[in-house]
Image (cartoon, rainbow, N blue to C red; front, side, top):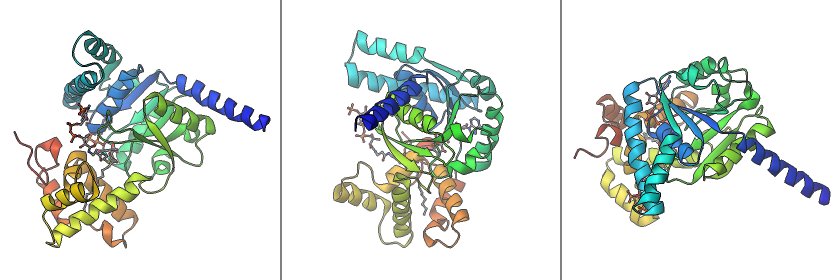
Amino acid sequence: MAFFNHLARRSFAQSAAMANAIKNVTVIGSGLMGSGIAQVAAQTGHNVTMVDIDPVAVEKAQKRIGASIARVAKKKFGEGDDAAKFMNESMSHLKTSTDAVASVESADLVVEAIVENLKVKKELFSKLDGAAPAHTIFASNTSSIPIAKIAEATSRLDRFGGLHFFNPVPVMKLLEVVRIPETSDGTYEAMKGWGKAMGKVTVECKDTPGFIVNRLLVPYMFEAVRLVERGEASPRDVDTAMKLGAGHPMGPFELMDYVGLDTGKFIIDGWHADYPDEEIFKPSPMLEKLVADGKLGVKSGEGFYSYKK
Ligand SMILES: CCCCCCCCCCCCC[C@H](O)CC(=O)SCCNC(=O)CCNC(=O)[C@H](O)C(C)(C)COP(=O)(O)OP(=O)(O)OC[C@H]1O[C@@H](n2cnc3c(N)ncnc32)[C@H](O)[C@@H]1OP(=O)(O)O
Ligand SMILES: NC(=O)c1ccc[n+]([C@@H]2O[C@H](COP(=O)([O-])OP(=O)(O)OC[C@H]3O[C@@H](n4cnc5c(N)ncnc54)[C@H](O)[C@@H]3O)[C@@H](O)[C@H]2O)c1
């Protein structure tokens, strides 16, 4: 028994050591998720470079992070010097860039949170694979795309995995840590250890569709839309019912608006392509029209509901 305890202690020590080795973090994508991941990494003392292809998105992200850190600081320290110190120290760990290749030169970990599109993600990782140091771990925050499909664009399958955060990242405690068959034990332990260093509770996931949460949550959201499309209830009543009847903090329509209808469409289109005979994944006329009209939810000011002030 002592031998196995020794092994367990050594494995824990290894993962702690590897997680501690993750100091320089590059987050690619400064949207809803990338800005949240970058914020929490900065708040937890990592050296963070947040990158986006769109300079306007970077500027919006900095504003979003500033407002969010203020909420976190107020919640942790109330008003006063300690809150200001926390905010200043966190922001001091955060740099921004629009040059993805340069941003990974000294990265220990790259977390990708760009558009939910396999081709674009593969193009990005292929480009970064030649620029990042050999030891750098690559991870995708994808909601629905198989990690293995993204990883095949690189030569570092043993140092590739999924780190699936939840929205809003500063609040949601869960982190799904996904491995592909080639992910080394050291990489997996380092990713789990880093998740804990980020203040998250990690769960272990295989590279299956939707990992754990989205495998259950996305069909639920799909059914909510079908129910409304069949004229059986209004979005507002469905949301009220799920909040008061199932204790959810948000109803499905509020949540779809919150996560972004564009991301929702990317997911359903991807799963429909992969599973064409699955009725539930057939395109939704209601969602198609909203996205075509630029109504993407909170991020655009209107989705299923209007958020215009
Ligand atoms: C057929 C076609 C169908 C097509 C549709 C398919 C859709 C598919 C969509 C899937 C998308 C991908 C999903 C993704 O991969 C995985 C996810 O992320 S799923 C989403 C997970 N998140 C949730 O479920 C969020 C649920 N909501 C909540 O938890 C809460 O509502 C809230 C967001 C935390 C807000 O809380 P409220 O009480 O309502 O409001 P407050 O503003 O008071 O906030 C409470 C508390 O939290 C702090 N806080 C809130 N937001 C932030 C922030 N951004 N930064 C920092 N802190 C924040 C706030 O300070 C409050 O703290 P307090 O002061 O009260 O202690
Ligand atoms: N929205 C959510 O609730 C949520 C939750 C968990 C995971 N995810 C996943 O996270 C990823 C990002 O989702 P989001 O909601 O933050 O999207 P978003 O649209 O808010 O942000 C995406 C950002 O990526 C940038 N981008 C696109 N292509 C790029 C490139 N080649 N290089 C650099 N930047 C690029 C865009 O300019 C944009 O700012 C997706 O894979 C999504 O499935 C989303």
